[in-house]
Length: 218
Length: 263
Image (cartoon, rainbow over all chains, first blue to last red; front, side, top):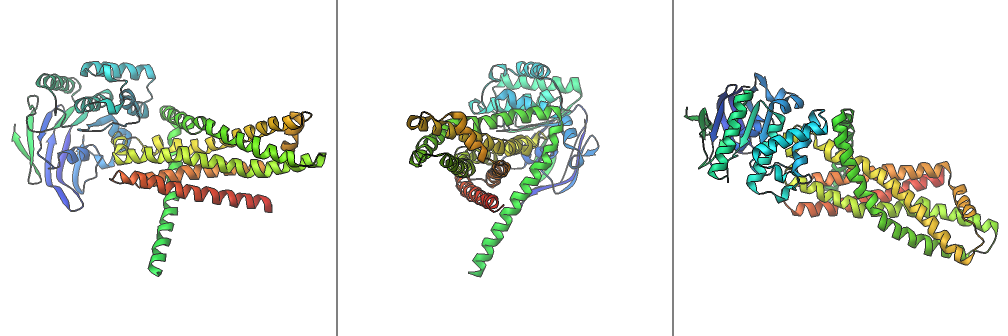
């Protein structure tokens, strides 16, 4: 799936985050967006997921404007992984992952359970599926967010500072899983990174500078 | 002074508009119930809400109904002179005081104190920590998942609480009266009370439960939605919603009872 952002303007009240920003990601590509502090990386990803409205420009997912896409279609195509939080504290980890799948698709419980278990085992979080959200640490929260995204099998995966707090070994393992996922499904991945994060799987790396998205390394 | 009055009126108007908007939104979101999978989610949340609101209130409801029935109503029976007409007078009094007024009022106050405050705090917490946005990010409707179960569970819980309160009051009143008058049969006692329960009583009781319960739910949802970025917003929301709910529920009871008396 492709993502095409042109003449993109995004801001909140008096704060302008992006002005005339551009970014293109082709089907199956993995792109990292290197971010600093409060430079708008999270808001950009949320805009790409249709969560945050942007002021002007075009944001095309597979040639279709995200703001005009019906909710069910966005759900099937795009998944966003929160850097922090991102889970509903009233539900267990399992129900947090299962709820969107049950809400949008008419899958039976066994099918949902099988799919969740296989992704949870892959990410090494099978043992925490019955935990409450408050029992998780930051890394586990991000992995649960990733699991919820992967069970949907999205065509565009948006991961916000996923690697933060991970050990080098865990980081490489998770990145390898993401690379395999993109290779097998031809899904695209846009991942924000911060100091010390790995760009080893990225086809290209961008950074945010002066409210624009600048190519850092091909 | 005029400015202050105008500002108060504007606030009141905006409050009623918000409640009406919330009601419209809740009804609109009911369309998701057609979707079988979403119906399962709704059912899960609805059962949880009904259990917390209705079933878990049984203890306090029983305690108050026992006090009203066994002390107040049984003592009143003992104070009446003997005679068939007095039993009829007593039954009439029982229906007006307990079934029409006290049952709904006390059940409503229990609902507001136990469940509506909890819902305001729960939803306020979700709002404070942006958890509604989490659902929106998954393209799910927070109104459908969190608000709709409350909207439907509150009136139903209140109705069940009314019925339960009346049943316990009647039974406890009878049991205590039996100590003074062992010849009184339960069938005679119950028939005398039920004979005074007219269709109008049923309609008024149903209206109090359904309108009152929905109103209490909507007010909780309204005030929890006003929680912004501070933790103290939650305590303020609970305090404001409880006040508004008590005023609204008492007003509704008075209005419906006056209508019933006049009809």
